[in-house]
Image (tube, rainbow, N blue to C red; front, side, top):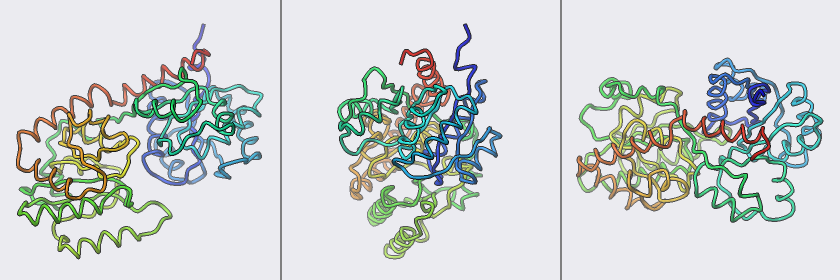
Length: 382
Protein backbone atom coordinates (compact mmCIF):
# COMPACT_ATOMS: atom_id res chain seq x y z
CA UNK A 1 0.00 0.00 0.00
CA UNK A 2 1.37 3.44 -0.92
CA UNK A 3 2.15 5.89 1.84
CA UNK A 4 -0.35 8.81 1.59
CA UNK A 5 2.41 11.17 2.69
CA UNK A 6 4.12 10.42 -0.62
CA UNK A 7 1.01 10.76 -2.76
CA UNK A 8 -0.57 14.00 -1.45
CA UNK A 9 1.13 17.40 -1.23
CA UNK A 10 2.43 18.81 2.05
CA UNK A 11 1.44 22.45 2.52
CA UNK A 12 3.65 24.88 4.45
CA UNK A 13 1.30 27.69 5.48
CA UNK A 14 2.41 31.10 6.74
CA UNK A 15 0.60 34.40 6.19
CA UNK A 16 3.30 36.46 7.92
CA UNK A 17 4.69 39.48 6.10
CA UNK A 18 7.80 39.63 8.30
CA UNK A 19 11.15 37.92 7.79
CA UNK A 20 12.80 36.27 10.76
CA UNK A 21 13.66 32.83 12.06
CA UNK A 22 10.05 31.61 11.95
CA UNK A 23 9.59 32.57 8.32
CA UNK A 24 13.04 31.39 7.25
CA UNK A 25 12.33 27.97 8.70
CA UNK A 26 9.07 27.66 6.76
CA UNK A 27 11.03 27.97 3.52
CA UNK A 28 13.96 25.89 4.81
CA UNK A 29 11.78 22.91 5.72
CA UNK A 30 9.67 23.11 2.57
CA UNK A 31 12.88 23.00 0.54
CA UNK A 32 14.22 20.09 2.62
CA UNK A 33 11.07 18.02 2.09
CA UNK A 34 11.05 18.90 -1.61
CA UNK A 35 14.64 17.70 -1.85
CA UNK A 36 13.61 14.42 -0.20
CA UNK A 37 11.13 13.79 -2.98
CA UNK A 38 7.89 15.04 -1.43
CA UNK A 39 5.37 17.21 -3.23
CA UNK A 40 5.26 20.49 -1.30
CA UNK A 41 3.38 23.76 -1.62
CA UNK A 42 4.18 27.07 0.08
CA UNK A 43 1.07 29.03 1.02
CA UNK A 44 2.11 32.64 1.53
CA UNK A 45 0.93 36.22 1.24
CA UNK A 46 1.65 37.65 -2.20
CA UNK A 47 5.03 39.39 -2.46
CA UNK A 48 5.82 38.76 1.22
CA UNK A 49 9.42 37.86 2.12
CA UNK A 50 8.37 34.20 2.34
CA UNK A 51 6.83 34.42 -1.13
CA UNK A 52 10.01 35.89 -2.57
CA UNK A 53 12.28 33.38 -0.80
CA UNK A 54 10.13 30.49 -1.98
CA UNK A 55 10.22 31.78 -5.54
CA UNK A 56 14.00 32.10 -5.36
CA UNK A 57 14.20 28.50 -4.12
CA UNK A 58 11.91 27.44 -7.00
CA UNK A 59 9.29 26.08 -4.63
CA UNK A 60 5.63 25.88 -5.72
CA UNK A 61 3.62 28.76 -4.24
CA UNK A 62 -0.07 29.53 -3.82
CA UNK A 63 -1.44 32.86 -2.62
CA UNK A 64 -3.26 33.37 0.68
CA UNK A 65 -4.28 36.53 2.52
CA UNK A 66 -3.26 37.76 5.97
CA UNK A 67 -6.74 38.63 7.24
CA UNK A 68 -7.74 38.66 10.91
CA UNK A 69 -6.25 36.44 13.61
CA UNK A 70 -9.62 35.29 14.96
CA UNK A 71 -13.05 34.56 13.49
CA UNK A 72 -12.06 35.28 9.89
CA UNK A 73 -14.72 32.96 8.52
CA UNK A 74 -14.36 34.02 4.89
CA UNK A 75 -10.60 33.46 4.94
CA UNK A 76 -11.08 30.02 6.51
CA UNK A 77 -13.63 29.07 3.86
CA UNK A 78 -11.34 30.20 1.06
CA UNK A 79 -8.51 28.30 2.67
CA UNK A 80 -10.63 25.12 2.71
CA UNK A 81 -11.35 25.60 -0.97
CA UNK A 82 -7.66 26.10 -1.69
CA UNK A 83 -6.74 22.90 0.13
CA UNK A 84 -9.35 20.98 -1.85
CA UNK A 85 -8.14 22.46 -5.14
CA UNK A 86 -4.55 21.42 -4.45
CA UNK A 87 -5.52 18.10 -2.80
CA UNK A 88 -3.43 18.88 0.29
CA UNK A 89 -2.86 15.85 2.50
CA UNK A 90 -1.10 17.55 5.40
CA UNK A 91 -0.59 21.17 6.39
CA UNK A 92 2.23 22.45 8.60
CA UNK A 93 2.05 25.88 10.21
CA UNK A 94 4.30 27.71 12.69
CA UNK A 95 2.64 31.07 13.33
CA UNK A 96 -0.14 31.06 15.96
CA UNK A 97 -1.69 33.93 14.02
CA UNK A 98 -2.80 31.31 11.45
CA UNK A 99 -4.13 28.72 13.91
CA UNK A 100 -7.75 29.82 14.14
CA UNK A 101 -8.11 30.10 10.37
CA UNK A 102 -6.60 26.68 9.70
CA UNK A 103 -8.63 24.89 12.35
CA UNK A 104 -11.81 26.44 10.91
CA UNK A 105 -10.71 25.55 7.39
CA UNK A 106 -10.32 21.94 8.47
CA UNK A 107 -13.87 21.95 9.87
CA UNK A 108 -15.27 23.53 6.71
CA UNK A 109 -13.36 21.31 4.32
CA UNK A 110 -14.93 18.36 2.54
CA UNK A 111 -11.39 17.34 1.63
CA UNK A 112 -9.84 15.88 4.79
CA UNK A 113 -6.30 16.89 5.67
CA UNK A 114 -4.04 16.62 8.69
CA UNK A 115 -2.96 19.73 10.58
CA UNK A 116 0.44 19.95 12.31
CA UNK A 117 1.54 22.82 14.52
CA UNK A 118 5.33 23.20 14.34
CA UNK A 119 5.73 25.32 17.46
CA UNK A 120 7.75 28.52 17.14
CA UNK A 121 6.99 30.38 20.39
CA UNK A 122 6.66 29.23 23.98
CA UNK A 123 3.33 29.57 25.73
CA UNK A 124 2.94 32.76 27.73
CA UNK A 125 -0.17 31.92 29.75
CA UNK A 126 -2.29 28.90 30.59
CA UNK A 127 -4.67 27.89 27.81
CA UNK A 128 -6.97 25.32 29.40
CA UNK A 129 -10.20 27.24 28.77
CA UNK A 130 -12.96 25.93 26.54
CA UNK A 131 -12.07 28.33 23.72
CA UNK A 132 -8.48 27.11 23.36
CA UNK A 133 -9.29 23.47 24.09
CA UNK A 134 -11.85 23.42 21.29
CA UNK A 135 -9.41 25.06 18.88
CA UNK A 136 -6.58 22.69 19.75
CA UNK A 137 -8.85 19.71 18.96
CA UNK A 138 -8.40 20.57 15.29
CA UNK A 139 -4.64 19.96 15.49
CA UNK A 140 -3.49 16.41 14.77
CA UNK A 141 0.07 16.80 16.05
CA UNK A 142 1.92 19.41 18.09
CA UNK A 143 5.66 19.51 17.44
CA UNK A 144 7.59 21.00 20.37
CA UNK A 145 11.17 22.04 19.68
CA UNK A 146 12.63 20.99 23.03
CA UNK A 147 11.56 18.87 26.04
CA UNK A 148 10.86 21.98 28.16
CA UNK A 149 8.29 23.10 25.59
CA UNK A 150 6.55 19.72 25.63
CA UNK A 151 6.37 19.91 29.43
CA UNK A 152 4.98 23.44 29.15
CA UNK A 153 2.29 22.37 26.67
CA UNK A 154 1.29 19.48 28.92
CA UNK A 155 1.00 21.70 32.00
CA UNK A 156 -0.63 24.73 30.36
CA UNK A 157 -3.10 23.15 27.92
CA UNK A 158 -5.43 20.16 27.68
CA UNK A 159 -3.80 18.99 24.45
CA UNK A 160 -3.38 15.16 24.50
CA UNK A 161 0.15 14.23 25.59
CA UNK A 162 0.37 11.38 23.07
CA UNK A 163 0.03 13.87 20.22
CA UNK A 164 2.90 16.09 21.40
CA UNK A 165 6.24 15.26 19.75
CA UNK A 166 9.70 16.70 20.41
CA UNK A 167 11.68 17.47 17.26
CA UNK A 168 14.41 20.13 17.56
CA UNK A 169 14.98 22.51 14.69
CA UNK A 170 18.00 21.82 12.54
CA UNK A 171 20.22 23.84 10.27
CA UNK A 172 22.10 22.83 7.17
CA UNK A 173 25.84 23.14 7.99
CA UNK A 174 26.76 23.36 4.30
CA UNK A 175 25.56 26.97 4.05
CA UNK A 176 27.96 27.88 6.87
CA UNK A 177 31.00 26.70 4.88
CA UNK A 178 32.10 24.43 7.71
CA UNK A 179 35.57 22.99 7.38
CA UNK A 180 36.91 25.89 5.33
CA UNK A 181 39.67 28.14 6.64
CA UNK A 182 37.88 31.46 6.19
CA UNK A 183 39.00 33.46 9.22
CA UNK A 184 41.38 35.81 7.39
CA UNK A 185 39.07 36.48 4.43
CA UNK A 186 36.03 36.86 6.69
CA UNK A 187 37.78 39.37 8.92
CA UNK A 188 38.84 41.35 5.88
CA UNK A 189 35.27 41.23 4.56
CA UNK A 190 33.89 42.58 7.86
CA UNK A 191 36.75 45.07 8.30
CA UNK A 192 38.04 43.45 11.50
CA UNK A 193 41.69 43.36 12.50
CA UNK A 194 43.36 39.95 12.31
CA UNK A 195 44.58 39.89 15.92
CA UNK A 196 41.47 41.22 17.73
CA UNK A 197 39.41 39.04 20.08
CA UNK A 198 35.88 39.42 18.72
CA UNK A 199 32.54 38.46 20.27
CA UNK A 200 29.60 38.32 17.86
CA UNK A 201 25.85 38.64 18.32
CA UNK A 202 23.38 38.01 15.49
CA UNK A 203 19.68 38.81 15.51
CA UNK A 204 17.15 41.46 14.63
CA UNK A 205 17.71 44.78 16.39
CA UNK A 206 15.24 44.57 19.24
CA UNK A 207 15.41 45.23 22.99
CA UNK A 208 14.40 41.61 23.63
CA UNK A 209 17.47 40.44 21.70
CA UNK A 210 19.70 42.31 24.16
CA UNK A 211 22.17 44.14 21.94
CA UNK A 212 22.22 46.95 24.52
CA UNK A 213 23.22 44.42 27.21
CA UNK A 214 26.15 43.27 25.06
CA UNK A 215 27.30 46.88 24.64
CA UNK A 216 27.07 47.58 28.38
CA UNK A 217 29.03 44.38 29.07
CA UNK A 218 31.68 45.34 26.54
CA UNK A 219 32.08 48.76 28.18
CA UNK A 220 32.64 47.08 31.54
CA UNK A 221 35.11 44.48 30.32
CA UNK A 222 37.12 47.03 28.34
CA UNK A 223 37.27 49.29 31.40
CA UNK A 224 39.20 46.44 33.04
CA UNK A 225 41.73 46.38 30.22
CA UNK A 226 40.40 43.57 28.05
CA UNK A 227 40.90 44.37 24.32
CA UNK A 228 37.65 42.67 23.29
CA UNK A 229 35.64 43.87 20.29
CA UNK A 230 32.02 43.29 19.34
CA UNK A 231 30.15 42.63 16.09
CA UNK A 232 26.37 43.09 15.99
CA UNK A 233 24.65 41.80 12.86
CA UNK A 234 20.94 42.35 12.23
CA UNK A 235 18.25 44.67 10.94
CA UNK A 236 15.41 46.44 12.68
CA UNK A 237 12.19 44.44 12.83
CA UNK A 238 10.21 45.01 9.65
CA UNK A 239 7.67 47.87 9.94
CA UNK A 240 8.79 48.75 13.51
CA UNK A 241 11.10 51.70 12.86
CA UNK A 242 14.67 52.47 13.94
CA UNK A 243 14.25 53.68 17.53
CA UNK A 244 16.30 50.83 18.96
CA UNK A 245 19.07 51.33 16.39
CA UNK A 246 19.30 54.95 17.55
CA UNK A 247 19.41 53.80 21.17
CA UNK A 248 22.31 51.47 20.36
CA UNK A 249 24.16 54.21 18.52
CA UNK A 250 23.72 56.52 21.51
CA UNK A 251 25.13 53.85 23.83
CA UNK A 252 28.18 53.45 21.62
CA UNK A 253 28.78 57.18 21.75
CA UNK A 254 28.26 57.29 25.52
CA UNK A 255 30.85 54.57 26.15
CA UNK A 256 33.23 55.68 23.36
CA UNK A 257 32.91 52.28 21.67
CA UNK A 258 32.21 53.33 18.08
CA UNK A 259 35.67 52.17 16.98
CA UNK A 260 35.46 48.71 18.58
CA UNK A 261 31.86 47.75 17.78
CA UNK A 262 30.79 46.90 14.24
CA UNK A 263 27.10 47.32 13.40
CA UNK A 264 26.34 45.23 10.33
CA UNK A 265 23.07 44.77 8.44
CA UNK A 266 21.51 41.33 8.26
CA UNK A 267 22.50 39.26 5.25
CA UNK A 268 21.63 35.88 3.77
CA UNK A 269 25.27 34.78 3.64
CA UNK A 270 26.10 34.49 7.33
CA UNK A 271 29.19 32.32 6.99
CA UNK A 272 31.58 35.30 7.10
CA UNK A 273 30.10 36.45 10.43
CA UNK A 274 30.62 33.11 12.16
CA UNK A 275 34.08 32.52 10.69
CA UNK A 276 35.25 35.99 11.73
CA UNK A 277 34.38 35.85 15.44
CA UNK A 278 36.12 34.16 18.38
CA UNK A 279 33.01 33.65 20.53
CA UNK A 280 29.25 33.92 20.08
CA UNK A 281 26.85 35.62 22.50
CA UNK A 282 23.09 35.13 22.71
CA UNK A 283 21.67 37.91 24.90
CA UNK A 284 17.93 37.44 24.35
CA UNK A 285 15.59 37.85 27.30
CA UNK A 286 14.00 34.55 26.30
CA UNK A 287 14.71 32.66 23.10
CA UNK A 288 12.29 29.79 22.48
CA UNK A 289 14.82 28.07 20.23
CA UNK A 290 17.80 30.03 18.95
CA UNK A 291 18.69 29.10 15.37
CA UNK A 292 21.74 31.34 15.68
CA UNK A 293 22.88 29.35 18.71
CA UNK A 294 22.93 26.06 16.84
CA UNK A 295 24.61 27.76 13.88
CA UNK A 296 27.40 28.86 16.23
CA UNK A 297 27.57 25.32 17.59
CA UNK A 298 27.86 23.93 14.08
CA UNK A 299 30.82 26.20 13.37
CA UNK A 300 32.43 25.14 16.66
CA UNK A 301 32.41 28.43 18.56
CA UNK A 302 32.47 28.92 22.32
CA UNK A 303 29.07 30.31 23.29
CA UNK A 304 27.72 32.59 25.99
CA UNK A 305 23.93 32.40 26.33
CA UNK A 306 21.15 33.60 28.58
CA UNK A 307 19.97 31.17 31.22
CA UNK A 308 16.34 31.30 30.07
CA UNK A 309 13.81 29.60 27.80
CA UNK A 310 15.36 27.09 25.39
CA UNK A 311 19.00 28.17 25.55
CA UNK A 312 19.98 26.15 28.66
CA UNK A 313 18.66 22.94 27.08
CA UNK A 314 20.40 23.66 23.77
CA UNK A 315 23.69 24.24 25.62
CA UNK A 316 23.15 21.16 27.79
CA UNK A 317 22.63 23.33 30.89
CA UNK A 318 26.07 24.91 30.70
CA UNK A 319 28.10 21.87 29.71
CA UNK A 320 28.84 23.25 26.25
CA UNK A 321 28.47 27.00 26.81
CA UNK A 322 28.53 29.66 29.52
CA UNK A 323 25.17 30.86 30.86
CA UNK A 324 24.26 34.21 32.43
CA UNK A 325 21.01 35.78 33.71
CA UNK A 326 19.10 37.77 31.06
CA UNK A 327 19.86 41.49 31.20
CA UNK A 328 22.84 41.06 33.53
CA UNK A 329 25.63 43.02 31.83
CA UNK A 330 28.03 42.39 34.72
CA UNK A 331 27.66 38.60 34.41
CA UNK A 332 28.04 38.82 30.63
CA UNK A 333 31.21 40.90 31.04
CA UNK A 334 32.58 38.28 33.43
CA UNK A 335 31.84 35.54 30.90
CA UNK A 336 33.59 37.47 28.11
CA UNK A 337 36.63 37.92 30.35
CA UNK A 338 36.59 34.23 31.29
CA UNK A 339 36.70 33.16 27.65
CA UNK A 340 39.45 35.65 26.88
CA UNK A 341 41.58 34.53 29.85
CA UNK A 342 41.23 30.78 29.28
CA UNK A 343 41.94 29.63 25.70
CA UNK A 344 41.87 25.97 26.77
CA UNK A 345 38.35 26.40 28.11
CA UNK A 346 37.32 28.17 24.90
CA UNK A 347 38.60 25.24 22.88
CA UNK A 348 36.84 22.67 25.08
CA UNK A 349 33.50 24.51 25.01
CA UNK A 350 33.77 24.88 21.25
CA UNK A 351 34.47 21.16 20.78
CA UNK A 352 31.61 20.18 23.10
CA UNK A 353 29.23 22.55 21.27
CA UNK A 354 30.19 21.10 17.90
CA UNK A 355 29.70 17.53 19.15
CA UNK A 356 26.28 18.38 20.59
CA UNK A 357 25.25 19.93 17.28
CA UNK A 358 26.16 16.75 15.42
CA UNK A 359 24.17 14.64 17.85
CA UNK A 360 21.04 16.77 18.12
CA UNK A 361 20.62 19.65 15.69
CA UNK A 362 21.44 18.79 12.08
CA UNK A 363 18.77 19.54 9.50
CA UNK A 364 18.84 15.92 8.35
CA UNK A 365 17.94 14.67 11.83
CA UNK A 366 15.23 17.28 12.21
CA UNK A 367 13.61 16.46 8.88
CA UNK A 368 13.65 12.74 9.68
CA UNK A 369 11.93 13.50 12.99
CA UNK A 370 9.23 15.57 11.29
CA UNK A 371 8.83 12.94 8.60
CA UNK A 372 8.07 10.38 11.30
CA UNK A 373 5.46 12.69 12.87
CA UNK A 374 3.85 13.36 9.49
CA UNK A 375 3.65 9.65 8.65
CA UNK A 376 2.00 8.89 12.00
CA UNK A 377 -0.54 11.62 11.31
CA UNK A 378 -1.35 10.34 7.85
CA UNK A 379 -1.77 6.83 9.22
CA UNK A 380 -4.04 8.04 12.06
CA UNK A 381 -1.53 6.99 14.69
CA UNK A 382 -0.54 10.36 16.12
